[in-house]
Image 1 (cartoon, one colour):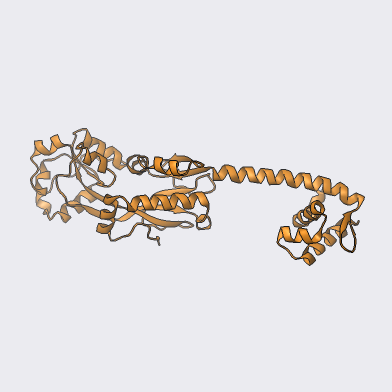
Image 2 (cartoon, rainbow, N blue to C red):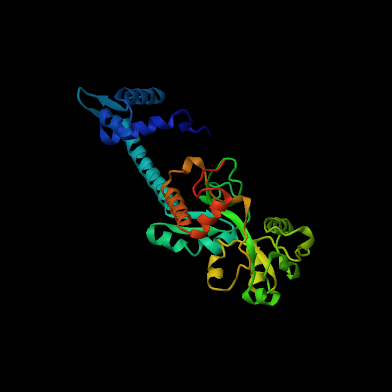
Length: 314
């Protein structure tokens, strides 16, 4: 069976519903942001497609024909239901901010600060996803992403959040047991982390390859697991003094040496360019970047990396 609506433009029905509800082509034009001539043309086209008049046109006003009244009753009811449904969808979407992020960044930095955002934005519920799957945002219900990389992802706008910096971290007991006085003393340590990052750190600390420790015996797929080994007194791990600032401040971890290395990559907040002005995304982005700027460890690390918080990627 052929759908009769297939031969009627949807915009013509919308114009008709507005004019029928207001009983005025002029007021309908104002409500729709169209010219009165455009409203008249749309309705005339609809009448021709239906092969019957829908309005009786007077000198200063219009009224509905019997056929127009029947169509108007259905059109007004349908449009009311549609407006209500669209409003529900939009309000539901605006009431939840869905963030996808990396596990270590989420647990070590974001989670301890997110409460202040929620206090300032009581109308927003926040959902945090730490799935390793790289989302393109939007289709899977996620709004913003906190990502690690160069700041360039197809179809996304990115702003620099914080640098990826690392330095040796260990427990106070491990530092004392190994009697760490110079970077070369780490050759006695059980190293935890990526070999290339340790090689970069030793080079920055001006330790010759002959004096460096054997290759690390433990690596993991995220920084949290590696630093957990250091917290457990199982070795010396490379970790971020930004993400582990609380543990360092509380004395759970120590930095036996101040030498810190910055990777070319960093952490970024990303979102689709078309949604940069969406209120919930704009509010979260501005709050997140302001929070990063207020963190002395982030500022120091950004200076080391030669970047500025909020810098546009690309």
